[in-house]
Image (cartoon, rainbow, N blue to C red):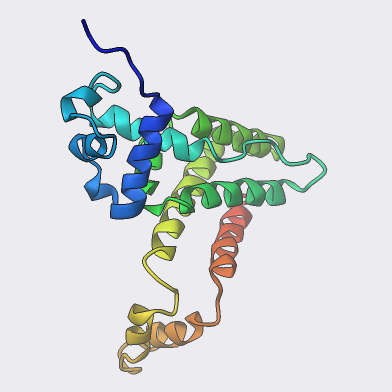
Length: 204
């Protein structure tokens, strides 16, 4: 007789996410998660069929924290999009090691689908439809993902940027000048500044 299930999928996802937060995505294996739960790797297969399903549970746990409630309709549509994108950024940035999982599984995550549905509704109200709406949603997803990964590589004015600032001005004048200016830009200024450039482009 099989042993009764005593582990919920939420507990399993929380344990897997804790492994990623502590040791990075490369450390996520069925064996590692099983060890954290003090069980055998084969025992873990009573709860998930494979690592892909485990990763999906992790993505759902992260994206389910993102508030998908539509902002007030009295707020201009660009500001509503900023609010929604800011929420997604906060939810994903809390677990940077799991960002790639949230991208890979976003179409199967109810949390991710709820966020997308709200954003698409705002875009529709703004008159952005058809292919433009598709491009807009994908651009927003891509922007958030890339921005989070860049933010967590280190400070904008970190060691890499400092090295660029010392490049020969005659060969890389624009890189050197931009790197010197980078230290005065906060992560929020960089993130929302880039986002506003994207949103303004939707009027083209």
